[in-house]
Length: 329
Ligand code: GLV
Ligand code: MG
Image (cartoon, rainbow, N blue to C red):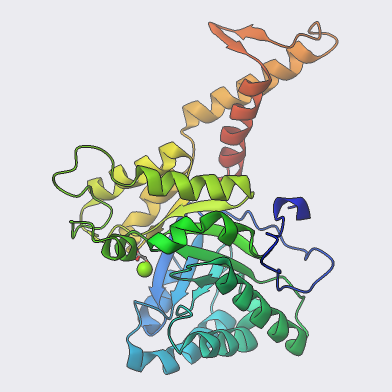
């Protein structure tokens, strides 16, 4: 990622304090992002064997207040001693309005910073909250002798204030990798009349999430970040999960949370292109390359069967092909 992808808003100094870009690709696979309570060793053990692209070990809402101090150490142990090969390793800390955040970050990053990819910050309300986390991470990295800037930030948007500031949040630090929609807290914060997370509120005839999802997606795309859809709590309702996941995937989201092992395969499938779309995208790329070449007549547009293809088609095909290649197709 280039530094131009993250212009600093005039009023918000970025806190990272590192000159060179760290050696990290922030666009990691995140089709399925598995939530694992940090206080539950059995789940922490089991999660290592699941085919999720990302795991996040939770110190926030899946972890009871009295269990948090011990869970920090449990997470450190599992990050250092577990086998998380092939997975993006994330820890969700508590939000800055609590008194837990700094201790979560210090304990986890000092203890396991070498075996950790990102910190997820929930209920982000403005850019300053990202800058504060960035500064704290920089100090810990310097103190511990870790590469400065390596640990990324995932920002959860979970209330109206966060959504209003989503673009500034996306630009607040070069560490930010993803913007995540947190539907449960969001629905509560705006008084939405539904208790089924991710489902439409009864009585509203259209998609109540469209504006929220699109705002998050625009902020993510404008800043070269990933957009991730949050949880679907009816874990036994596979069709419900698939329908909600398909909606986010259709818009262009990169992945979705999974709360149960049964949801992992669905997310991996839905956020990968179908084989048919992938093959077609590769065909467009090959055909475009040929037609624009000397041998193909240096054409700007050409026909592929019944379909006209041009530079815009190439860009669309690149998105599908890139996702397919990342998924190992
Ligand atoms: C996730 O944190 C949510 O509130 O949906
Ligand atoms: Mg939440």
